Length: 372
Image 1 (cartoon, one colour):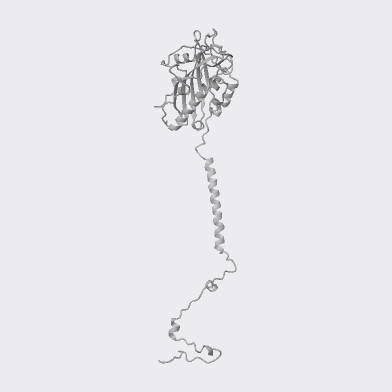
Image 2 (cartoon, helix red, strand yellow):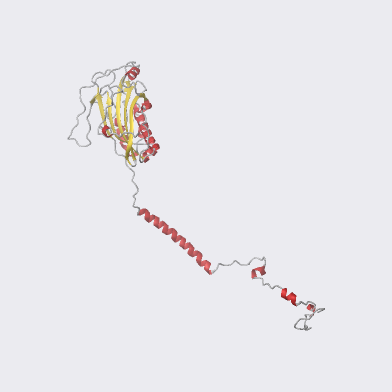
């Protein structure tokens, strides 16, 4: 076929205003090849922004409030469950252990004759305390090993606290002759503070409020240190007293060189020795160990030379060089009296060599041994 063909339906009618399109004729192959595509409304709008904001569907509006309410209910249920379990906890909250009052026994030791005198150096270096160390170096810590419920560091901290107490209460010159008590009181468990303060302010021979049970103290108006070097010798031991408590026992002898506290020059040979044996039982729980404090459970003290009649509740009353003990015995005790009974005890001072076994106190039979 040559030339331009006619459409299948025949020649178009020559009517109306379509004459200008008469020259546009599409053959059958062109029509079949044409692709028809209908654009969506969004595509027909092109890049033009919508004039209004679309509202969420009804289903969306319902889902969001329900999810929020469910979350609030879940949190409320968790809170109620936590409160309920707290009240219904089968394991009660442990109650902190309260420290018990200190029990003290102070026994004066009376000399059999006159108290020997001399220079402080000759008495300390030539007497029974010659082999003892000076000051805090005489308070040695035992070998530290962990126990069942306490670590090495906890045991070491407990022993260090006890040593600090012994140093402050037995070797500090401000405490011994100066009337200072703060270095000792600050190491005590708060439950014993009131008892300690009363013992310092109003000492009494009732077994609980003797100042000399807590510390070594002399009346500064009567005596003073003839030599600042104080000899110390003894042992420290420890053992568990429970799952949460350590018991520490100290057994030390302290030797002091004293002289009269009188104005003016002193005689060089006017010094004399005074010996104090202290057997102390301490208890320390985990809180005490952490806070560097302790509880003094009992104190057994022997001190001399003194007269048996000496009142030693507020301060020790040494017999100085050349002095003799009076013939009076210890103060009497009335068994018919009411209240806390007082112990009227006295001993005889005997000079022993450092190599002899030390005298044992009444609690020594149950003193724990340090763990190897």
